[in-house]
Amino acid sequence: MRVPHVVKTSDGAWWAANQSAELAGPAVEVHVAPPISVLVAVTSALAWVFYEGTIGMLRDAGYEPILVSSPGEQLHRIARDAGVRYAAIPMRREIAPFHDLLSLWRFYRLMRRVRPTITDVGFPKVGLPGGVAA
Image (cartoon, rainbow, N blue to C red; front, side, top):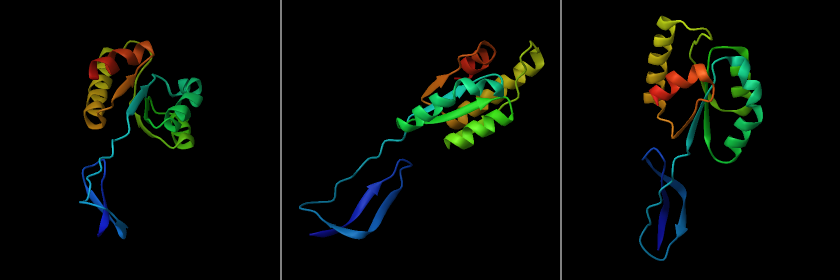
């Protein structure tokens, strides 16, 4: 029996290949698990130098890293070189209640949009808004 090769993608859509495959029975539904997303957040874009190897290892292991920090060239460079997504959320290193609350709101909106499986907010300043938003 010749039937088209059918696969259900991670976003729930069905995809049929142009080629046919020999099957001995009815078509089997194939589920593709979405990659595990890992949101890694640091306060300053300059801190990404400590994560350069880690981001590539996460990606190579099948995870989907998402980088978050204050805007800066380091963030763009690391994300571009590793081929991963990133988000720039302005954060101040010093205590600034209004700006900290605004950063928390932006982090919350990002978390709701991305819905990461794992969050790594290892720096103290980003730990509070990142932990609360997660």
